[in-house]
Image (cartoon, rainbow, N blue to C red; front, side, top):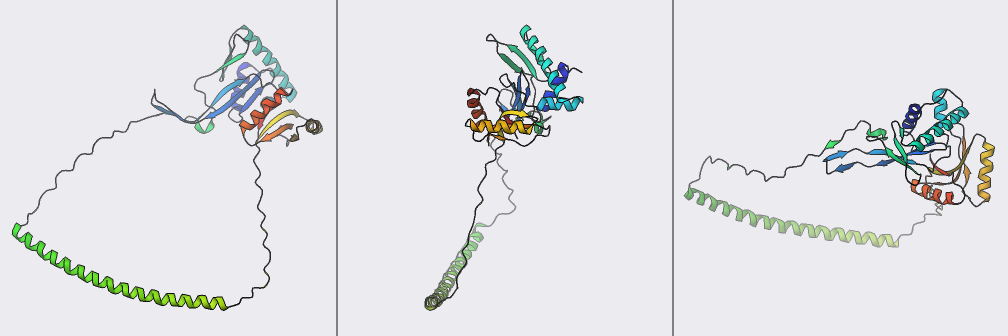
Length: 309
C-alpha cells in the first residue's frame, strides 16, 4: 500500500479541523490560526470567523499525529505509515525542484530565489468547524431621515371666550384653597414627625447607656483558620523535546534535560496513540510557548516543537 497525493492531503485537511499543527516528517508542518470576524468596506460584506492555514518548513520532526491517523485509517502498522510518509516527502521534494507543487485541498508550494518554500493557501478555506457553511452577510445602510410631522389634530368643539374666562377664574380660586390646605397639612405632619424623632432619639440614648454598663462573658472563642487555595496556572502548551514508545526512554531524556539546566523538563501523560512525550517546559499561552521554543532551538535543539493539550 502506498498513500497517494490526494489521500495524504485529504487526511492533513481532516486533521487540521482538530489540531492546530499537522507535521509531515522531513518536509514541514501545516498550521492553522484563528481570525475574528471582519467587515470588508470594498464589498460591504461581513465575513464570519475563520481558521486560515499556513506552512512552516522548519517544523519537520515527527510528532506522531499524522502517522498514527494514517495507521488507523488504512489498518497498517505505525512503522509502515512512517515509511510511506517518507517516500511521499521524497516525491514532494522532487516536484518542488522541478517547479510548483500542488497540495490538493490545501494550497501550493514553490521555491523562491533563496531556495526556501513559499506557501499559497487555496482560496475559500476555513478550518473553523463552528463557522462551517456560514455565508457572508451583506451590510445594509440605515437611512436616518427626519421624521414626518404628525398631522394637526381635528377640532371637535370650541369654548366660548367669555365662559372660558369665567371657568379659569373658578379653577384659580380652587387651586389657591388647595395650596393653603396642603401647606397647613404639611406643617402639622412635620411637627408630628419632629416629636416622634425626639422620642426615638431619647430611647436610643438610653439603650446606649445601658449597653455601656453591661458586661458580656462570651467565653474563649476558637481560632478561625482560613486557607485559601493557591491558584494554579493552566499549562496547556508544551515545548516538546521528543516522543517515545518506551516510557523508560522518555524518563531518561527528561532527567538528562534537567541535568542540563531545563529544570521544568518532564514526561507527559501517555497519548491515546501510546506515546510518551518529553517537554522542555509548559506554558499557559501559545505565545509564551513559541517564544521559549525559539530560544531552545538556538541551544542546539532544532527539532523542538509546540504541543497543545
